Length: 414
Image (cartoon, rainbow, N blue to C red; front, side, top):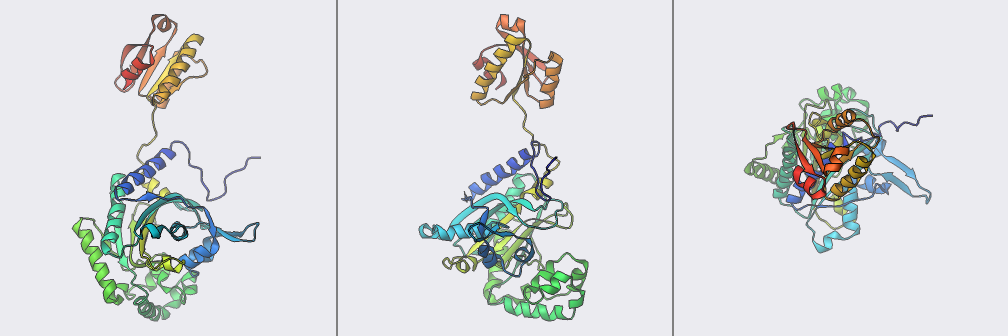
């Protein structure tokens, strides 16, 4: 009986994993330039962490979390997102005691039970970054600029940056009231989920993808018209700093995000290349989250991107690695020499492949082509007698004789 993977849980195979490694390496390099350090957090957390941080009325907590009771009768959840876990670690280990300003990034799998679709799975992977301890809108602009820099380093002109402000606990209640009054007359046109969330989370109707909800929310009041003076000033300063450093953006006043902890600046990087689910990365400020989780009153801002969706944008690019050398060995003694030479070169940092089955010269050269090797080294009985081998440059189509010594072969292919 063949046992297949669980629906929505995917293998990442050779040929694809090189793309992921490139994305991760680019993130580490770019984020490092901005002073971020990596943090690794557990996959399993207490369920209350996500209920308190994400919000009881969100789709994630209501319908999507993988939660269960473990053998110790503890209610636990496989992490559906990374920010809550990072902030839990920030508080638990008192990272704020050394410096309230921290810059952390993470990468790894997340879990949500939702309908699998292109680039969105039940086990999916995120790369995220968080900054704590800074209220200044300059950090908003810096985080957004870093995110755009990352995509530029990948060679992607898509996606594009959209920003909004959700206000703060002082000004958002008045906006919620105004929006509910607007939606109340259109309640029958909203989808079942938006009707259910009408009292607890009416803002979600603004970014619902349902046709009825899109039509019903045309002309809805804008959150930007209900910002208090402090939030309005913060959003204006964020835009000014983005323009100062030439980070392009557009304002999307319907962007609300799906997590309750967001305040003030929110943002998405969106593309039209991946269907209806256009967001590739998203985030925002969460100035009350750390205190809500039992920590000090320290502000924060961060984002997460979906690695699967970034990989789809890179789909046409080639990331498979190629060996530096393929050693073609003819006859038993030559295969012994090839094996020893391969190991010596690998210890020197060279990527080397050989044939293990004693195939013909033609078959081994075909295998070298299949690997797309930069060089092929041919060792036969005559070459062993002469102490020389034929080195073929597979890109240029040239060849030369080289002595069968590790340091000379290494020099010839360097």
